[in-house]
Length: 75
Image (cartoon, rainbow, N blue to C red; front, side, top):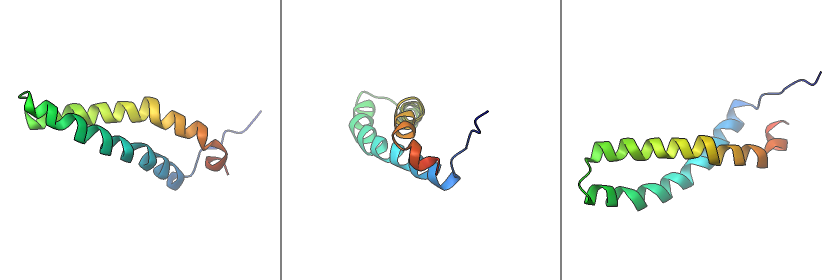
């Protein structure tokens, strides 16, 4: 039976950072002003965009990065 290794926490922190920073810097400036301009409450806008960022990170960006860096993560 093959032993499943869990990546070190500091390596996972780097993967999360690499996934979330580009999303924040691309999605927030693009959509936040538009959502506020159509009359959405700023707090609701933040809530919706943060939810979107987390979903994209967890289901798209992080799996891609985990696959890309699997050798480094498992060292």
